[in-house]
Length: 259
Ligand SMILES: C[S@@+](CC[C@H](N)C(=O)[O-])C[C@H]1O[C@@H](n2cnc3c(N)ncnc32)[C@H](O)[C@@H]1O
Image (cartoon, rainbow, N blue to C red):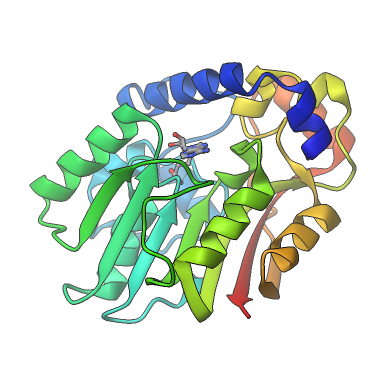
């Protein structure tokens, strides 16, 4: 990962990622390298009855890669941090689980995603949900203030994954959970892929080799308890599909506990 980060222009990457996910927020019906929306959520295993209870417009802009909320097992009254919350699908589902006595803080760096999630929270009465502008590598939350950190399809986009895992560990109290879905690869991706900001923004180029990914989580102070492959997730463009086949790029969900 650090090799890739050195060779990738991270400012260009940030602009590409922001541009791509601005389009996902504003024009979700467009075609991307990846699937979006309600059909994807249902194929990944999100319970339809739960989806019916959150704003449909949030789900239209869903760009996650796996289901993990069963692993998160969020309880009433808990505080949840959603890293890279996008238009809010997982934040709103988490808010159903925390109930009005809990709190869900979504953090995202893309203005259009934040604006959409905030509008939907206000319109649909999700008063326990708040969306803050920030980076997943340094989310604006108090240390040890969170019971569960969640994230969907985001850490692969970060040029500094160890910093993102360390930030999750800092936000949690000891015993707190990290539950996420993300993209990893079976084999280390070559520079031609990792230095392609467009493939990176499409959740492929930044995929970390799976053993390195596990090691980065453990090094941040977590013990991985569950690791699950999400075979239902697939990329849609030929270019994306070629890279994923060749290097074994797949979606996983996991549960880890802060030591
Ligand atoms: C693939 S989308 C997933 C959004 C949401 N989790 C979902 O499942 O629909 C990735 C999101 O992460 C945000 N993002 C990517 N890198 C980020 C970073 N370093 N800091 C904060 N947000 C980031 C993007 O703006 C985008 O909204």
